[in-house]
Structure formats: C-alpha cells, structure tokens
Length: 223
Image (tube, rainbow, N blue to C red):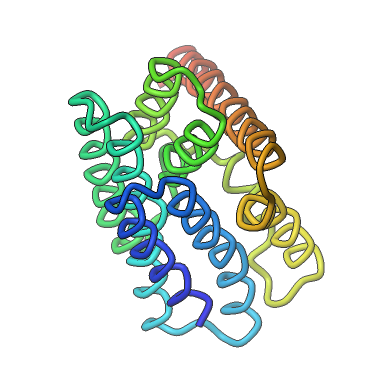
C-alpha cells in the first residue's frame, strides 16, 4: 500500500502539474517521498518480496524522476533547458535502474532521487532558475558516475537488518521534511522548501568533494 501510494502520488502530481496547479503537484511529490521513507523498513519488517522490489523500483522512477521532471518543465514555462534536463533526469534514472537495481549490484553514483528533491525544494522556494538548473544538472550527472558514493546511502539505509529501532528512527527523521511539505501552509511551506533545497545542495557539495578526493586517492594508489 505504501509503495502503491508512492507511485499514485507521483502520477497525480503529473496531472496537477499539467493542470497548472504547481503547489499541489509539489505536495503530491512530497507525499510520494513520504510514502517511500517507510516502504523499505516495512518491507524488511514484513519480509521483502520480488514483486515488492519491482514495484518499488518503478514507483520511485515515477515520483522521484518523472514527476519532478514534468514539474521542472512546467514551472519554467517549458523552457527548453528545463525540458532537456527533465529528459536527462528520466534517462539517468532508467540507466540506474538497469545498472544497479536490476543487476543487483552495489549502489554507485550519486543517489538518483537527489535531482527530484532539489527540484521539489527549489521550485517551492523560488530559487533562481539558473542556480536550480546548475544544481539539478550536477546531481543528475553525478548519478552516472561509477564511484561508490557510500555516505548518502549510509544516511538513507544505515542498517539493512530486519526491523531495527535505528532504522525506523532514521526513516521517521527522513520523513519529517516531506511530511511538513505535504501539510504546511503558506510561508512555512516556502521556508521548508528552502530547507530541503539547501540540505540536498549540501549533500551534493559533499558528493562532489567525495568524488574529487576519491579520484585523487585512486590516482595516487599503487597499481
């Protein structure tokens, strides 16, 4: 139910974006991400299934890639740059699907959900377009990297053990900003948007530094 909720919230967000109601579309994307915060811990608690894993992969692509890409295009009045970035986001999310998820190998590259979160916070906060464009493009491009950005995944899934208290607590912590974006009104909605955008931008900056130092370490290491 949580994973279906994630997918349906993403599709509904696309409907509202097409209608021109960007605020509702953004809240629905946040709702999808809220559902996604808990479907993993629930699956590990109840026992994961192959059907559930497949549904989760598809749902994430809808709510965290396709829906934000559509919102980005609509919010910028279908600027050609934003449409190109939107296509890039969806393309990269599908590449990640076959490279890591379907192949069942360790996660590599920057988290594919980061561009969607940047769009979510940036559009709410009305971040200048070129700043948002640069951040989204950088996060999307880094998702194609084969360098294992282990720290974002350590934050997201620190312990895959079944039903641990720490796992549930961190899932709840991760869900707080998305829950706030679903329910907060007016100025609080904008302030929380800035918080989400800045938080993800900091993660992006850490990812870039990680990539630089990781590459430097690899070059200096003996063959």
